[in-house]
Length: 144
Image (cartoon, rainbow, N blue to C red):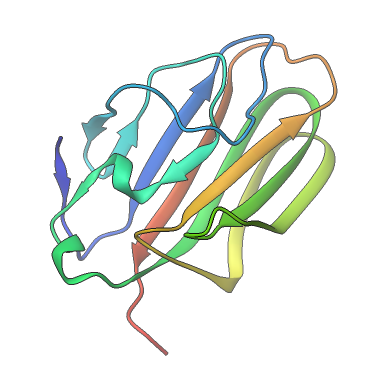
C-alpha cells in the first residue's frame, strides 16, 4: 500500500456501479494511490470509509483525523446519509439529504474520527443511472 504524507489533506474515493447504491459496507481490494487520493475500483456496493484501508505514516502515534469535505455524485435523485461509525460498531447519523444528484459538503462543525472509527455513506431511492462516486477528504486534526 502507498503511504500518504501526514502534513497534507488526503482522500478516499469509492465508486458504485450503475444500478446500485452505497450501503455502508467496506470495499474489497486495495486502493490505487494518485497524489493524496486513494481510489477503489467500482463495485456493486460500498460506502465504508475506513482509515485502515490505506497506510498512513503517522498512524504509529495514533491521533485524530478531521473530515474536511465529502463529495457525492449520484446518478439520479437520491436520498443519502453520512454517519460516523464508532469503534463499537454503532453508527450515528451526522448529515443527510434527499432528492439530490450531487452534493459537496464542506464540514463546518468538526467531524473528528480516530483510526478505529470510520465514515459511512448510504444512498437510497430513485433509479441509479450511471456510476455513483463518493470522496471523503481527511486531514490530521491539529487541535483548537
